[in-house]
Length: 611
Image (cartoon, rainbow, N blue to C red; front, top):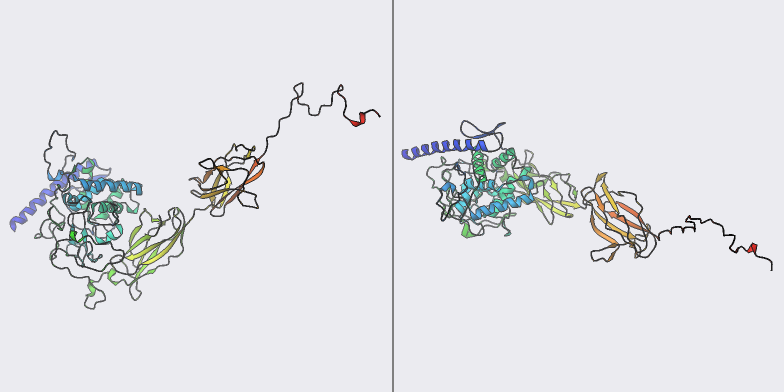
């Protein structure tokens, strides 16, 4: 035991020395205002970054992580001829499928949340410290881990206290939650943060594509811009709220930014140091080949969680295949029932006491396409007696055929109730699809009936349509109008963009029936069209109509423009023969009033001689 303790001291000393050197080097090459303190830890010139994310709201529940730091030299392999020499464990590169998942996640986030500026190297850094890149890339071709990667149960014994929220579906533990998968999500966070990264129709934390995309969305919430150091720090700390975790991830991020290389799946090695090394000296260290092994030593007095069948819960993902279940150990205790008189009151969490959800005053959820709803959804968690329950996680989910999302582009949001038991969802942003949809509020970790809110998206509207100039629109029969009609749409005085406009050549101001003669448009095939739909104004509210033509019918005609919101504009079109130019006189001067020449006989009857 003494020898073991001595080895631990030596290891700690070496780790501290390496950390100080590595982070000092990192601070000199990273973002401005980043420095290293006396212990080699990074700080900003203003203050040490902090996070207000609780364990229950973090991605990992602040579970243990690997503490090994990257080597000081660049990870990029030097050019070689023939078979390259083997590289050390810390320079083993990133397994091919794992690396592909990180890059695909970055690409997806670049499209859906371009303002986040998520680099795949950040996902790689977090994947390194959370699971050693999925235990050295032990994944199949679809990205599923070969055996589950499960962290210690979060029972409050050396870790956060997070009671079971998934009936053991993901972690096999029906008493407490465990972090799960290559990116180490706790089930309660996965419930709202989970994404389908490989388009197989399910969200599985044990799949590296799903886990990487979910981690990217998690890091990109709250409008964070990860190219800004302060936002980057906040995002990392929200993943695992530890200053040492922040410094370790930043070190690997800088390392991977300098370059890395791809290695075959399953050929990577696990890091050695873990943040919970002093929690349990007797627990076995994980091995890359272990099926169902935990990511690190277990908490004192705990056993490897074993899966237990449980009834399917609303809004819960489909359980992974049994072939991926963890090794069976001692049975875990079942979930506590707050209604059971034998359940000690002190073991109840606020979530245990929630009986139902109530609408906290949200009504009239309506917005114009593209606008933000002016009202936010508020839900109150209550006990059976109607008492408000604070510190409860409420998940809001956008359902239905709609492209409406919460601020930030997500269809999911999880919010903790305040002291009044109320959780207020982020603002809803209407998409371009019109119609009704539903937002459902549910309690994370409890089988409590969800509460639905109906919302409606209406068409974009304009209350005024006006021409941008007053040029007369004229044409000769069979010709074409030289000028095109251009209008501007406004709503309450502001430019109305993306407003749908219908243009119809009507019989008269009093008869809106489509005319069958006179001016017309042409379709793509050159055929006559007198009604145009699908026209929309641009970002400035402007719309220029296609060219107008005229048939052989002369007269005055009416073009009517209409839009949702009641805006109407009648435009006059005139088709007439061109007025003839006057004929010139023999002398070259036009003389329409000239009298007959004296030499010509008069046709005036008064000058005729008598018979």
